[in-house]
Length: 249
Image 1: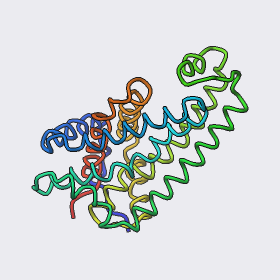
Image 2: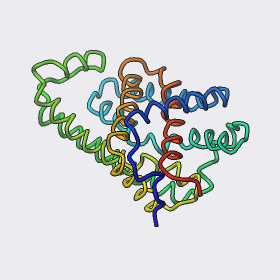
Image 3: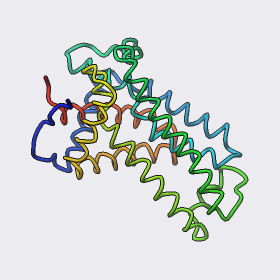
Image 4: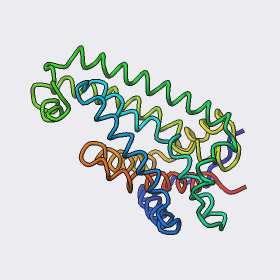
């Protein structure tokens, strides 16, 4: 049975800013160890852009996959915050093995997210083929062309379908992995609790989703090295969202 949420009253929309403030405190308390994970994310994003710079369709699909796989990739960040919550010093080495405490549930959840990512990548390519009006030679001028008035139909369809995918993934993942790490919960129990949290706190969770999309999206599109800071900020913040929404036992 999924745990009862902290309060019958919905969280305030401003709760998202509280998550970020607590996340920043965790980053400082951990001596910014989470930035190591951020550097890994930045390196992954850079590699995708380099490998697929002449295959812009795959680049867009795989870049969007950051939003889908983020909850699983942030396991170590959740654990750093968990260590601090329990009064320990942040131990980066221990955080890298945090997934082993409940690896079956986390692996199953990762498989679910990977499935969504693969489906989205393929759907994205199909949408490009159906609605794209240009053949883009490289990634450098892709964004200027894709956002031109000639491609509004494509952009609308692609963004709409992407929003559906991202919303579904956010609903099942907003607090799932932190709960698996902290309580040893199984995959379906965690997904159910996450969905219930979103249902009961729609405006607050929408604001949190907007913060995540803004921080990670700007980093991916404008300046990849920003992920060194924004990725751990989101990861630590997600831990505090979980702690706020699910009461202590």
